[in-house]
Amino acid sequence: MIFDLAHIWAGLIAFAVLAYVLLDGFDLGIGILFPFLKDREERHLAMNTIAPVWDGNETWLVLGGGGLFAVFPLAYAIVMPALYPLMIAMLLGLVFRGVAFEFVHRSVRNKGLWEVGFWGGSLVAAIAQGMALGALVQGIAVDGRAYAGGDWDWLTPFSALTALALVVGYALLGATWLIVKTEGETLARAMRLAQPLGVALLALVGAVSLATPFLRPEYLDRWFGWPSGAWSAIVPLLLAACVWQLWKGLRDRDHLRPFLASVAIFVVSYAGLGVSFYPNLVPPSLTIAEAAAPDSSLKFLLVGAVVLIPMILAYTAYSYWVFRGKVRPGDGYH
Image (cartoon, rainbow, N blue to C red):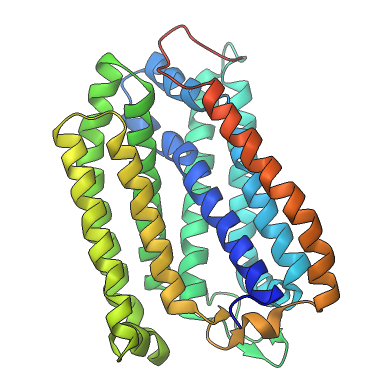
């Protein structure tokens, strides 16, 4: 059933993960772009565009990870041992990025060190997330109710490809966010950065999309079988429309459309993952229903989610509304 408790929770967790990828994605993208910005003043301006919202964006990561642990404990128990090194690297990267974010504005002698830390933490977190995604798409070996693979199963050419695609995607989100939030020379530089990043992302998404159906027979059937292939064909068509809007927005020097198009590219790509995965929660064999906690637990937790998720959405929307508009040199929130 599509609307049983397990599927409702799967949808909520999928939404939380997508919200994290989109919102923290442009934060990480700002850090990844640090070496390509002109000077310290421009780097600090870029940081100020995310200063009011970056820590709130990570709420969705907590919600997604905590929800997986509480609602799908079997999936959590299988996925975490398979991806421990990547999860540790991601968390260390996020922690170091957060520390560097605060210290770079307060340090007098070591600003350069903390700028490198902000860049390095953002890059490490993005790479770890991309490799974890690739490892999950490939499938995780399960024996009974436990992880049965090796320590290095996550390290493959495909996971490296997905990591590169996510790094470039985050960088594109960061560049288009700067287009929304800055003016003058910084805006022009962000426009110039967004163009090759968009081309690179299109090539990488195409490579990942072509490789994915051949990882597992069920993926191939869902993408090219009948009648599922007819529905799956909608995904590349939507992706092409998003790429067209990105190109048109950059060509017309529109300040908002490139960011919205970049977000749409992520949403459509995420939907493509859903086409490959469903009804599994952990490919190749652990389904949503099999991984779910008892219905009594799902009902109890859903009551909290009904209250909590609208609150998170409300304060997130409010913070973006309050801090809307362009950020100029000299502005700051520290």
